[in-house]
Length: 250
Image (tube, rainbow, N blue to C red; front, side, top):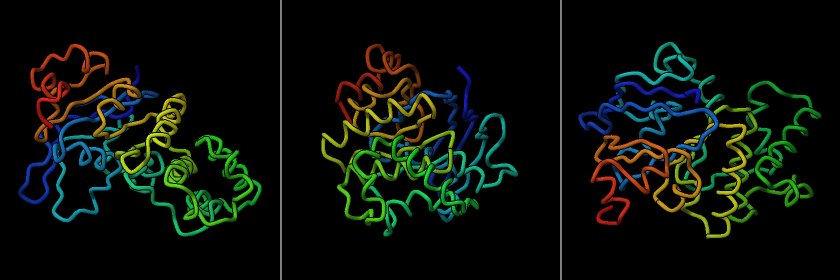
């Protein structure tokens, strides 16, 4: 399977705090990779390095290499291009305080698309991609803030899709949602991996087991184990992984 991200000997410091230690991971194209582990173990920190969101954190230093299809994203890489290729969905739904239509066209307009027919097509394609078109096609001019939490999160996924990314990063995308909305997002992730590479941080181990192809278990800033999800959950190599999966800590 072709790798999208190759992470080599990577370290992350927040000032003097060594948050990630010697990370080596290859994340494959058109797969769902889940990052699991206790709070504060470095999962979200690594996720935010993959589109350089950590650049915004004062005192943040990254060592080693993160290659996106062979190019080091911390070299002379255009951050705007990186964030176009690598979209992000956050823990809490964060629609912009504007119409549903304007939420989705915000990114394309920023990248210079002005033609109304093209924008209309993008809105329909992205809402269909996020399984929202039937629910929202007659409400496009209404405020996105009037949607339910689950709809808002799917709208945020549609918004991320609007600039044609290759990779979607998801930082606990269902932790603020009810079980029915969570199920819809999980079904959506399963459909989206045919077109996109998805990397998800989740506290919910059952969710990781349900939706991911590969799972990385993080502990105290290190990747303890990375393997097929079936192997991690049924036959882990490391006792610490086995203890975490078995609920002995975390």
